[in-house]
Length: 131
Length: 211
Image 1 (spheres, rainbow over the protein chains, first blue to last red):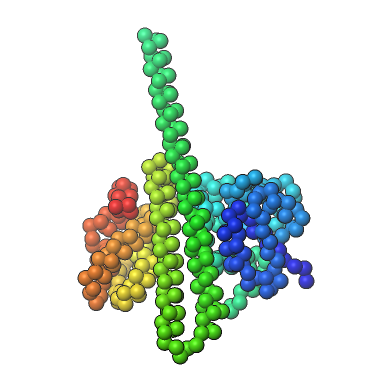
Image 2 (image 1 turned 90 degrees about the horizontal axis):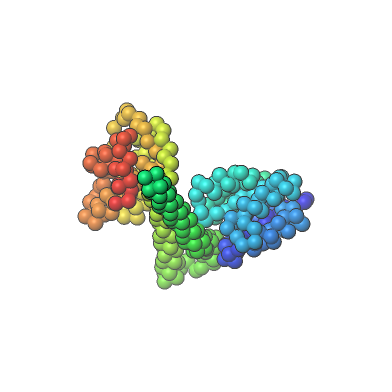
């Protein structure tokens, strides 16, 4: 079976750890988690690893999340990679900008861990335990 | 004369540009502040929830059940984590409210006006405040008039109004410790009635949310 991959992108180390620990249970089901700490690193990782799903922070140094998303969706021909923008701003303007650059979903920080896992499961087509 | 007018016009234009610039700076400042506050809050809330989950799923099952002191400590830990989570969530809501207020002041707030069922609003506000009742072991009886007419309004904002009034009512009531709180009195209170008849007077609602 082909391994599934989730890329976690955030410039805050605590938030990377938080998302990683939140999604940890998916590792037991054959999902690889890996991280990037800025926009450029993220693009590099997306090109090489071609993850199935990316949790992408918006406000980051060296290319923000909108630019990364735009590059992936509209310039690199990797539109099949599912991108969830994670933003702390929660403003209407950002929501629109997220749609413009082709993000699949837009979640606001602070996010509920359960919502994050549920979303990852549905994108990767994994069943929910106990359901 | 023409020169004088032109000068006045130019001054007015500059004043307007300066005001617009100040407004844009304020919006951008608030959005940055919101971001700066939310980022650490995300860690606090998120890790508190993960700790709770790890304790409940992996660590607590290993604890000896017959030790009363250990059991007590375990209950306290969970209760205290619950406080961290609920206060963190309250803080998140406050940040959202501050942002809303800024948007309202800047005239950038958009209302989602639609036909709203009053009983839906009350039901959802009740659901949101249910934990307050449970925590104080209070019975909640709600009696909603059947066939209330639909009103035009922004459902989420209305729920916010009823919720904050409701919480206030509950906390006031909790102080006096009655056996039963009838939330229905919300609707007969002047404030809530004003809030619910807000087709024209949006300002009333704003006052209620932020007072």
